[in-house]
Image 1 (cartoon, one colour):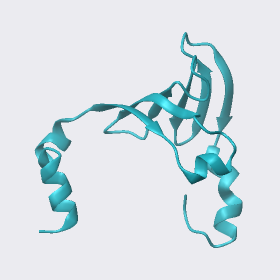
Image 2: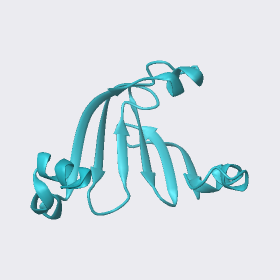
Image 3: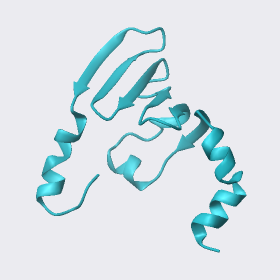
Image 4: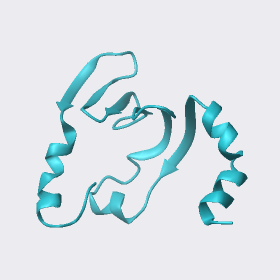
Amino acid sequence: MTLLDEVMQAHGGSRLRRESRHFTIHTSIDGDIIRRHKTPGVLGNVVINGSARDQHVCITGFPQRDQRGIYWPDRVVTGTISGTTLETRDNPQARFEDFRVRGLGTI
């Protein structure tokens, strides 16, 4: 049995994955990369909702407690929890083009 098989079995197996449409995670994320950017606590006590079918994630409580960040492959939106858009970025992966040019792979 491969590691992937073990992980899939531990989390409900492929049947559960096929039947799942959305997920919700209540979490706090911290570590060296967060501290290096001088933003400790920025991902503390956030709720992450996402689609199990499409590349779409909403992080509530980020970047501020009363805000949310929403990701699609072609657009990133920051806004208030009540729905007011504060900032948008189309084609967000273009910002990381320099990483690819320097040979660091795909992000």
